Length: 258
Length: 328
Image (cartoon, rainbow over the protein chains, first blue to last red):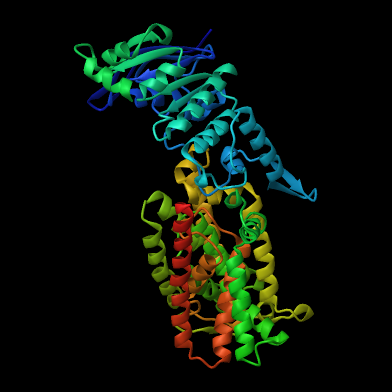
């Protein structure tokens, strides 16, 4: 079942055309890698999906609905969630505060004063979220800034899950991680897929993309230049599609080493 | 492994931060300082002097609460002392020069402060002038306006109802102290337990994260600055009622003491961490320091120097700890 369908998406900033008619389809529970050289339009494309940018022309359907005219908040309510590279975490606050930031559950105190944050419920729910992801954190009450990059990623994903998303867009989730932590983040992505959540993974780390995705879409010069099934492609082909053919053996060999 | 288990002291520290929202170190400083003063001066340890300290702390305490909210949200309000002076003059002007009922004088104090804070907030969030500059400008503006309204002279002859707010002692406890404690309790609950308070700290921690979480960042900042101004107005009311005069020079340099109290109390200078309980301990430290130095007959000029030194020392210690923690 197609969850997200983009057709002929165009976007320009002044005189600069960034997207020249991108077509992209993502099925429910599918992990799609989005790769492309710097400046290929990956970030712009993602921001037109989340609604931060309004596409100049083309159509975007999500879950059978036309969402072109909706703002980011409305699209999030429909189930589109994005995790940015900087993770957007408040580093001095604890795990539960970050997961529920902006949507803290409240209760009445002494049956009189409404609007008090229900910290116990928040901690309980946050713990459940982390466990659901099969992840481990040192302590739920520590400030997020004291965690490792992978643990912070876990918090960011747990936070995204509280919105009950159908699609999670992740921007370079493994870029700044230690080798050991990359695996745990890839496991988190597999966990999302097993729960039927679609993932768009933007990454320069082609090894990670090849190991976790179902499909790889190559963005080049503002077009979806190639749509590859991960099980039927390899590093060479992906690299050659990114740089646009020609002799790519050196570049591919470089990626394979990494 | 032994190193995995935090020591007893570390656990007590963490518990005090997580449960009570105070840093143990500041409490120890308060106790040590009080002990030293008690040894040095025979007058220090008495109920009347204790109430004196609290009374002297009440105005600074209210300002320090304002500073805690603003700094905790990643902002800065240098206009606290001037706005306090303006608010006191505004209240006295309404009561004495206009001869309106006392209630209007109270409202005028809070309103004048709140309005100054509202203007601060508007300028910070809409005109994109840094808070440092906006509130520094307001420091001059509010002080000048206070002098204009009062024509440079203190306004005397306040009605007794207002004087009672500053000098009354129900159950032997000075009214300003009661008002400070009530304000602090409400402020603590708001900052530590409500969504507004949590959003305030999240905003100071990472504006990007707060925005991504759907918090209306600019709107929130405007509320914080307005609140800060209104609290400065309350401080102005307490001061004016206590000295029984609308003094246009009231509150000069008070922002220095208030910000120092907030920082000593554990407020992160760059936002994201703050607690009212901590700030109250910080304000008490400042109060004990000033009271003790006065009892020891130290000239007030030196007291001013001491406050400045304490501010720098407090930030130094805080930054030192932050760097130490980030190395672990």
